Image 1 (cartoon, protein in one colour):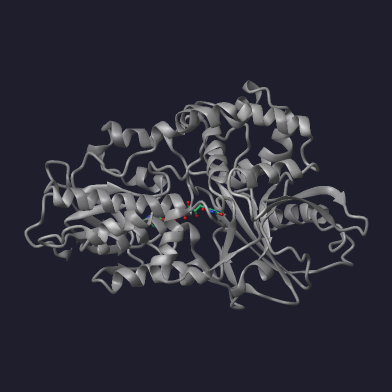
Image 2 (cartoon, rainbow, N blue to C red; image 1 turned 90 degrees about the vertical axis):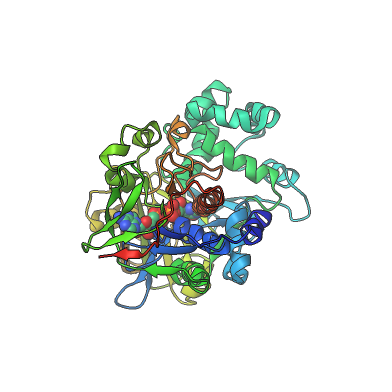
Length: 492
Ligand code: FAD
């Protein structure tokens, strides 16, 4: 990742810097703009909302407490994101946790009545894959030894045939793959329901096995791959703003509350400009869309729709997910880590008053919980969602929460619904993910749904922005982008 970043700085300076309109100030858009400015171009980032970050955006409620679009975890196996923190000089904002994966055991309690957790501990002194294997072998609470061996045998083809096999498995769901490889159902029930919900907010009956194998591959190949970090505060201020500042200091521009309403074409189907919702037009030399795939599909000009590159976007759809915040009047847990809930309605959760310096509270807990699969809940009122979540929490915190109201009290809550979030990675989706270079010479795509090997994640988004910046810079050097006489950035 460091070498790839350096290539932007080492590229020959363009004879005339290109004005590039980057649509969207999520991680893909901000990453693309950063690397375009490293390559000597002039990005103009157009963001529809009044907050940076897209799916990592966050805002303050009336009390000044932060509400986030999603509970976000950074992994050791995120080379481009980690490199971004280094390049921005903000590495200390990543709060790395102990190298463990912690699963709740709903319904099971310790002798003194507290929730039981089952831990996979990765020994610090062992390199990959040994640290992962020891972590799995030493945990006997979730899987028996014979179950682990059967799962290990099932994984052999992935180990022997590598990436090619991982990609071939996209035609199978996790459940289908487990059956085909003779892995006992209990492995699925104990581990993979939680993992599938954490990776893509859906169940193993729907998730592509490629997604799980991609994650396992990284975790087993890189010593720190599965190590997790929390950002030390809200992503818009702690990560996105430094990314924006970086490109602003190098001649870039950021325009907030600038929603594009359509893409205007020349006769040769190249982009002529962007029609904005306020009626103005933005004209640039080249354009990068980082809009989520569902919005992009609505925005495609008629003339582009029959082109196979754009047509296949119809195979991708956003998956619904709900992020919940619950503030309690006292501490519910002492675990400073991400927790896999292994409960029907929830995916992962964390007590942000412990895990995140910026949200620290020594007296009270703020649980942030991912509610998934959310298909049947996304249309329901917030009160119903909080009520259902409380039912799950009574089982997850048997000692701290009581239905009779005698335990910890819920002070307030916030529910953030994202009806169409990252693309739903059901079996067979890989075929539909577009590369960053489109058939239109001055139009490029980025966003976590575009083709790259890091799934629909912060790493995937950041890397896709970097790939789009590279493709665009290469096209500029090869003179394949039709330049405007004097690209004005804004025409009346
Ligand atoms: P987006 O963030 O969606 O950015 C697109 C931007 O385009 C937005 O800012 C949007 O406002 C803007 N836009 C849209 N339409 C227009 C328009 N017409 N004009 C101008 N601008 C427009 N990833 C992880 O790695 N780890 C996690 O733990 C994790 N947890 C998650 C939890 C939740 C609940 C969610 C929802 C996501 C999670 N993710 C996680 C995924 C991660 O957030 C995304 O993959 C990533 O942020 C996507 O970035 P992006 O730039 O591709 O898209």
